Image 1 (spheres, rainbow, N blue to C red):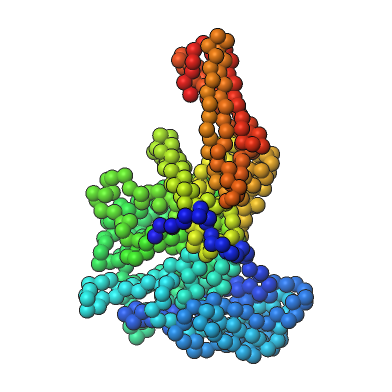
Image 2 (image 1 turned 120 degrees about the vertical axis):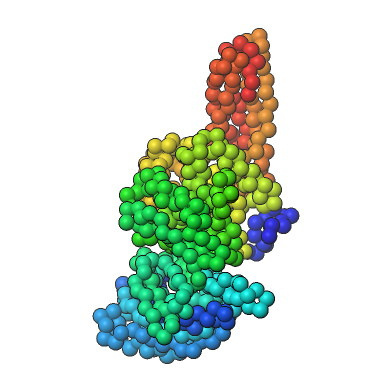
Length: 547
């Protein structure tokens, strides 16, 4: 739904600033046993979470309560401590003194406080029925007898909480082990590696295990009647594609995602990486997904993206989306944003790399068109509101996923690349990806990596173009004196608006190119003053030039 905003303000008056949570008590591992009753839109589950006290000292001696996000669960059957008694991680009484549920969160309080660096385990058994979001169920009914049978999850930005008890925030990352129970004819998929499959009395249990720590929004489970196409392995990483079996064939999956292995080869080379961050790369196309989502090692797509033989021969957006989602394997999945204000470190990067793929594989002219399109999308949104690319003030986290974040941030990455030069820029990016893999990242870490490799002080650039609002708008006057062959261009910024906080952009000089009739070109640089004005002069011109 388009945003209607007459005030040109991104957030409502009184919107709060949002911050990443403390990590004193931190969930570090989730084990989930999920039994789906798809036709009833019902899940019965037991989820066990390992919680670690990160304090090496005893300053937080009174800390013994944790809260898990859990919205509108039908029933909480049981909450219990499942810490292994006598384990080296926990030598004190770990029994739970009380727990409660208010429809939004489950709170758990132990009898004794956590000790320094102690880990405990808490298990929650519960039921969820027809969650309003987070899980999508599909099954045949009297109105649609051929409706396919499946369930899948989709969590970005904070929707795992509608079926999975967790701290639903990107700063909280856990390893993940899940057992998916369902009819034996169905395929169970999740993040990480397949650990086991077993059948008992017509029920198949599929177990997946993710060794990398993942935020809740990147966890994914799916169970359904899926067709599968296995593509080539690349450096030991398997590529497999899935879709609803009654709607699609292996051949259509092949032609839709055929670029995927080559995209991975290209990404590793572009980013200076020797390995892919994960042990597999699966893609699942399902109805009702509404876009595509970079779940860790299991990307989900709306099945509207699946091509037929006619559309495969045409210019398709699938190629760009495929690059965008796989780019997230580095920017977003391996390097996880510390909190939502830093979402540009994943979405702007995934957008920019999709354009870079077009440049390297379709040519400079097509890339210039992509840049124009990004600019147009960003400028259009700025006619409704302007905001900093990085901001802690917002109504809800989903509101950040706009054209400021995707094309607006991508254009700023392109500005940084032009400022630093290709070699320095990509060398710095490779270092950034390598240094911070499997870690939380923030904007300052990215800035400091660029500075380390370039020698630039980028503080002013980031203050103006990343933490500031808006973009540069110009009006100009041209003067030419034929008698001495001189010309002058006077430029003035016009975007300033004190009421909504748009200021002068002073950090970057502006290039003005003068082209003479004989094809000769001269470039002049203008540096803006505190009022947003500059002029560029040219001498020795034989005729009035074109601009």
